[in-house]
Amino acid sequence: MCLKQKTKIKDQMNRRQFIIGNSLAVMGLCLPFSAKALTILDDPRLSDFEKKLRPVGRALEFEEYYVWCNSPIEGPDGKIHVFFSRWKKSKSMSGWINGSEIAHAVADKPEGPYEYVSTILAPRGEGFWDATTCHNPSIHFVDGKYALFFMGNSNGKMDTKRIGLAVSDSLYGPWERPDQPLLLPGETGSWDDLLTTNPSFLKHPNGEYWLYYKSLDTENYVHPKFPVKGNRKYGLAVSKSLKGPYIKSPQNPVIDFSKLGDNKQCEDAFVWYENKKFKMLARDMGVFGMDYGLYMDSDDGIHWNDPQISYQPLDKYIKQPDAPKHLNRYGRAERPQLLFQNGKATYMFTASQGGKYETASAFIFKII
Image (cartoon, rainbow, N blue to C red):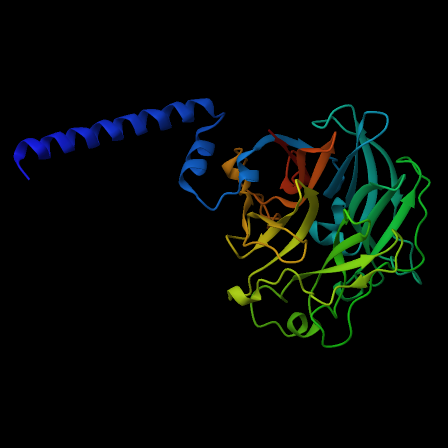
């Protein structure tokens, strides 16, 4: 190749690099913050869902409480209702397992501010399956009723966690509270013999009622082989009616990352159906990192595509003060739940440690 041809090729390459560089700079100016520009352009693991997120900020901050599990729904009054877990600050972060209650708050718009309405489910005391905690609320409007799926336990520990269902004709109650759990663990030695928790519900297009649940086996929890105790997996249970009985799928577990090695797992799943696809958000526990969220989709709700990142650590979106010593999950968003308006997902509600009282609160993202 002659010198003249080489010079021409080099000039073309320089021109192409200049055009690409300018284009990326313009894209960066269009974004609200430079960190977002870098992650969108540099990380192919990010889902399309993540690229639509814009941070709104914290909500539901109470001076004397930790707040978790924020499940939103738009009411017939046009207001946004959130059902959330809370427990006394004096119990520290670990109070979710032995002292949580489920409360109701309302706002005129998704961003808040929210006003506490009432506590709708509290631990009932000795003799009840939900004696010591009520947690993991997930609210849905189904067949003209409001269905609140939740988790309770009877001894303040992991091994009695069970999923239940409370039902009401109104978001303001009264709530029909179950005397028995909705879904029990599997037989001894099965993958789900320890507990049932983290409920996620949808009504299938075929009219069935699908309940996704998290569980793990007792052996790997009691005798852990890794720093994180147990290996969390997801199962599916199906019913012909809202109140059950729910029959576990023979294809369970439907989400199992154990084959990826290093005790990779997930929890806090939220499942919905959109554009003829089943979609899932979850909290990552080792696939990309403990402070990430996961996004997966599926054609049938049983076989799921490989995960992508659904949301990143909070420091990718906002600047926070340094972590207080008593908050060991600081900077992480958990329990993703979606708000739907006119059939479209418009906001993602998560739970995160921190805020002005150095406890935990809701952290909200707008979906553009």
